[in-house]
Length: 230
Length: 250
Image 1 (cartoon, helix red, strand yellow):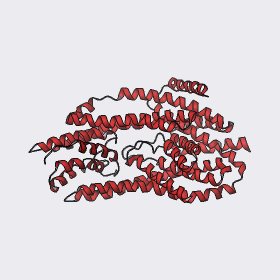
Image 2: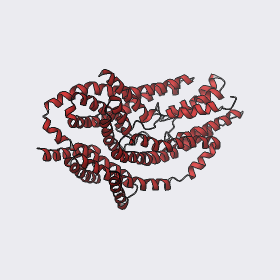
Image 3: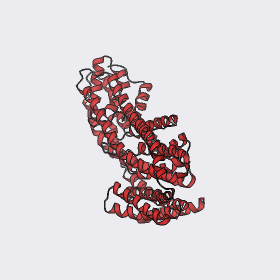
Image 4: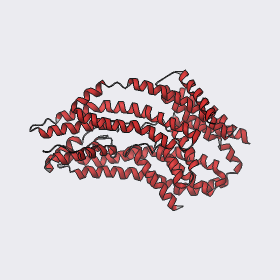
């Protein structure tokens, strides 16, 4: 279990780095990050499902300039780690665990955004002394960059580590006191959140292109594609 | 100051551009990252520590851009610094002017193109395939997204290094309006495709999930129209889904 938690935390750190600090080739997006977390911990289907739902919920988040954004990437990665590790302990309560993981992911993402802002303030505190230095050396700049990378990695690493350590033990206890008949009650939440994500996506493009026929054309194509494939 | 840069220096600057946001801060935004990127230039062009320190200080200032489009500025700055190194009385003010002049266009064009269109479109394509065919969504999204990403980085670097200061005029003339228009049409149509596929996915789960999906689409659309926050919309969707689940189960 501890090996898995450390592995998940390491992946959380890498995800945090790709979000803004390093590369930004988008393997940090929930669709990819949660799926890979699922593969790493041995349950791809759960990681993939959570990835799609979280992806839609955070698709309109724009990490541009000084804008504050919800840290959906690390939040959803942490929630996926908790979900996969908890389902191992309570395989018959998958619906309930997924529901709790979704709620957890939304909460961590909200808090994660504040931590990103805090890291940016720390980066500023490290940078300011350089402006007043008489002689700036290349290693000063390199150290600031390394500190920035270290801080962001730590954010992702410890976010997943703490979340997993706490909730992988807490959720099975919580689930054990909730009667199993309620599992079916929480199942539709997945559909509800998927719907919210779809509406967010439409809003993103609707603000640029207010044409109903395009949306209906897409719906028709979607139906045709589905019927053809299925 | 002496020799011009070598290919290895220019490659080092280009690859360092992948770390341009590593020390993002509210004082200089990407300024620290930009300074880090041009370190190979400082090592090559500045002979003494004093020259190097002055060089670094000149670049340790406010700079903002979309991270992918920053290569447009890095290439032009590399070219101008090389020219300044050849000049016995260099005017480094031009380099600062270039950076200031590019800050606006590089930020707005990049944000609009990548964050508003290419990222959501490639994700939507990925998710459509994901709901239909599974794991293929992951590599598909990464490929679709990173082709334009790497193209912009490489083209930006090569074009601006070739043109130097003149890249400002090229970027000023560049109209991304038409591309944006096409991308928004593709994006909205793909949203429709995704809704159709997502609704079928929810039917496959069970009736309650499907009903929850339909009701939540309507409720969320109304709440968005009423300008409610994402938290309110999410909470409402969760509560609505739980009520639907309770009605179907208990």
